[in-house]
Length: 367
Image (cartoon, rainbow, N blue to C red):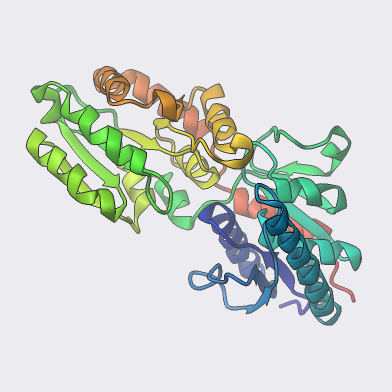
C-alpha cells in the first residue's frame, strides 16, 4: 500500500458525497492510502467509507447570499485554505480530489498552491460555482457528461469524461433487465425527490393517480418517498382511490426499487440522473427550480437528448398533466422500453474506475 495519501474532499449533499464515496472504494481496492477532508458541518464521512483519517477544515458559501454573509464565507474559505496548506505540508498528498461545493474549495486551492496534483469532478451538466473557480487552478478536470456548460474553452484540454460514479447497489441493479408492463398487469411507479423527498410530488402525484380510471388505478403499485409532514395526506388520497402505495421518508434500497420500476418520477439531481442511466429506466424528471445555475434542468435535458426521459418544469407539473402523461405511458409499453434502453446508453457503470484512472495518472507519490 502506498504511503502518500490521496485526499478526497467532499461535503454537503449526496450529489457530492456519493461519487466521492464510490471513488474512495475504487482507490482503496487499488491499495491507495486515503485521507478525507470535509467542512465544519461534518457528517460527510460518517459511514460507508473505506477506513481513513478524516480532517475538518473551515469553509463557507460565497454565492447567493447577502454582502456580510458572502464576506464571512470568503474569510472562512481563506482560513480553510491556510489550514489545508498546513495539513498538506505534513501529509504531502499524492493528489487532492474535490467533488464540487464549497467544502472542496480550501483543500483543492491549497493543493494547487503547494504544487500537488489536483483534480475536480463535476457531476452536473453545468459547472458549479466552486468548480468554476477551481477549474483554472486544477491539474485535471473530470466530468459526468460529454458537455459541461460553464467551462471555459481554454480548459477543455484538462477534461476527461468519466461519468458520475454511482453507488455499488446501482451498478448491481444494472443487471436487472427492463420488464415491459403487461397488458392489464401491474404497473410499478417509483416517485422520489432526492435525499429528503419533495413536497411537490406529494402534492401532485397522489391526486394525479387518483384521477385515473378505476381499471388503471387497480393496476398501480406505487413506491413514493415523501416528507413525514406530507405522509398522512398522501396516504389518505391513495387509500380513498384504492391505489396500492408504499410510502416512506427514506428507502435504503432505492436502486433496487428503481430497477423494479416501469416508470420513475424524480428530481434531476446529478446522482439521480446517473443512477437512472446506469440502471436504465424511463423517467419523468422535474428539476428543482431554485437550484443555482438551474443545473437540474440541464441534467434533465442531457438525458432527454438521447431519448432517455421526459423533462417537465415544476410549473407544468400539475395533477392534470401527470394524469394525462401516466395514462398515456401505461398503455405504451414498447415506448417505455425504448426510453429505458436510451437512458441505459448514457449510463457509465465503470465511472468510479475511470475516475480512479485519472487520479492515478496525475498522482505524484514522491514528496
